[in-house]
Figure 1 (spheres, rainbow, N blue to C red):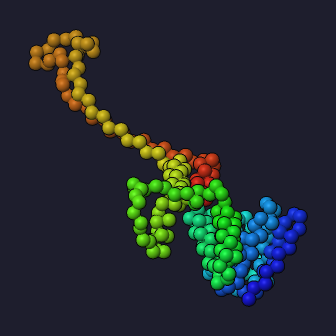
Figure 2 (cartoon, rainbow, N blue to C red):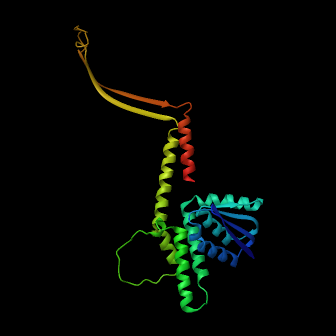
Figure 3 (spheres, helix red, strand yellow):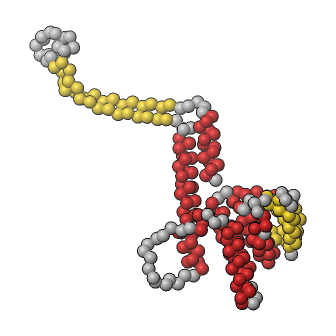
Length: 262
């Protein structure tokens, strides 16, 4: 059982939750959050969890989606604080943000479909789902786009829910972009790391030489000693190692690239 209280003031919108965030309470919170999106009008949103006694996995996903919508959370218990810390870590990952928002949309769609009157229910569901999609993903979100693959045909393809989700994740523009960003972040981290490692250079050279002794100033004529020596080979192998004792700028760049990769 969950009690939801919404307090509207000019500076912010405050949500006070009391009880357990489980089961049907999750759908109730999700529905209330989607409906109140227009009323917020860009104001700061604070969610008070001090009187929440238990949160299940679905409740955690809804809190994650709310956190990605820039909600601020207030908590006092050790369990709730640790949970919020974990959710903040997940909210920084693009794929986790997408899955959390996708979960919220699915819950919204599921919560909007009830055995009500046909016409009234259809109108209410369409408005609620549209509002939820707009509030959760935003109108310009890359997760609303996809990448074309193959040649378009008029053939009808039967898809299971699993197939639809796999196709959505494989060709979703937001997921593809997040994968590219992750690879770029890894490359930037390796580049920053290379500035902290020793620089080793090796050179190998091989030449064939012939020396004219007369040209070198040895102007003599000794029987049995030719005036031109060679040809003969010369091999040269050298190694160079350099290491910066301390470079604070390189250390900061490496820390920043590592944090960005997370």
